[in-house]
Length: 157
Image (cartoon, rainbow, N blue to C red; front, side, top):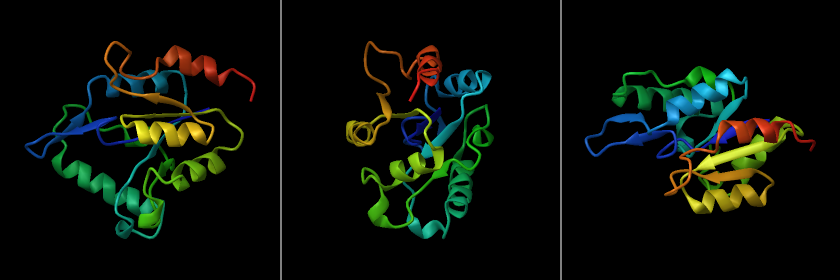
């Protein structure tokens, strides 16, 4: 199992004053997944000009976030390891399917979860076999409950 997230307005919020911090509940959700040893990843749009590889584009993303980070807790970059997927070209930007396909290919036959705040991304990921969850809906848990994620990870593929 791997739980992938969108970044902006899913895990982090960019405020009107230019500051960046965790979305409510995001740090706690990541901590709960970490406690259960559930791997996480990011599928996020950044300019393809930020580098030639995901690692280069992720390094630039980390710099951009760090410049305006105002949360008292550091962002949990180490949780994501090399599972930060970014567009190689502008045509790969979400909601195009390329990033979810690359994540699926890299994850083998594991159950994949995707959490984001936009319905077009949820629909696109679901169409590719992800268990998808729209974060921030009124009267629902902000994020997919960790107990449910853990149970999904125990299901046969």
